[in-house]
Image (cartoon, rainbow, N blue to C red; front, side):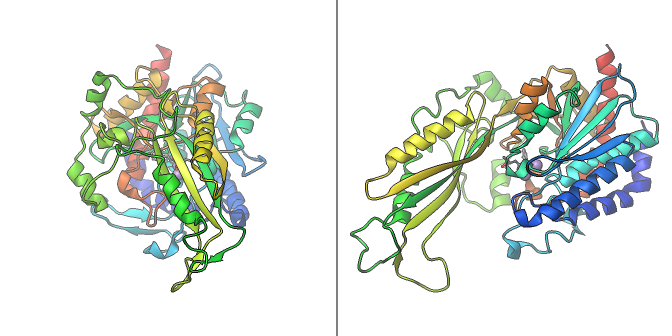
Length: 463
Ligand code: BES
Ligand code: MN
Ligand code: MN
């Protein structure tokens, strides 16, 4: 396996060029205008998987965007690793905040990435991280280092809630049988502090609409006498949290798993500098639920956030108007034992109860997902840990993340698998933001580490 470093050295320019080609395809799952590019991206992933040594690969249709499935079965008696990733990306908006166009990748140095980072939408989330697995596969098949069976499942709807994946997994249950699921779609603490993600938050996403009068009104003639939906919506949102930044929806915390003091002090051992955190975000202070640290607020505690809010006049200059409607998109991140369908119901009931008679309120649930936490005493985790030890010379720290990959808990339920989250992104990589980037060092480190996982997992499975 020591030949991996050599192989990387020899091929790294090509590995970067190939990633650049995939990043050029604007596979934005949320926008129907990019349906053609979604297919183009799926076809490209399929072709690259075949080139990397898969025996079969297909673009499998769903009622939404297709799933790319590929496999290489070398021996039915050997373990099988199922790799999951996604080829869809978030919309790049707002475009004017990008220093270079989101689908014209460029390599630039940054303070954290002196080796250069590749700037493009999807570079880290998740095309770059997904493609590490394709190149690791190429290395293993080209160098006779593939120790077990591999299956790839690369979907196109992750960024819009994996709506049809539930159905697709149930349809393809037999084909997807595996001994462990491996995903690189998360981050790590820093380049010299490797970590393995052991938890993800769940999600409930809703849109609300508040309606006042049946038409927009002159704010002089009617202002003060008729409800302004934007004012009312702001007041309603303000009531969703209290002075301790605790969420005030009745029943919201009923099933929240509380960590023991021991677990919390273990968490607090992870390297973290609040000063650095604030400095990087250019904020004077942090904000969050009373009684919890910043790391805890961002991982083991549930949240409620407005993601967007609109209505009325937002054009140039001033228009005096009392809008007829106001809207907001609200997300709640959930933690173990919270059921997103129940939470969505609780939100709906509570939000409707907050509305005065002067307005009508409609709550439209969008999508959701269950949280996930994995133990570290499994073969999968131990193999991942051993892999990082090989390439970082350090034992990775288990860490729960605040992000969500709804499909992960579904995998556990439907396929009865353990999921290993080997993420190589950094918090500063600006995923979902303008100027998203992925460090070349991280990209290559990922490709280097993944084959070690296969090796250790296969060896540990034999025992
Ligand atoms: N890869 C991210 C999730 C992530 C990023 C987890 C970093 C942990 C660390 C994924 O693509 C994502 O953005 N998920 C969405 C959820 C989805 C339902 C839209 C999210 O977390 O907002
Ligand atoms: Mn992702
Ligand atoms: Mn994402």
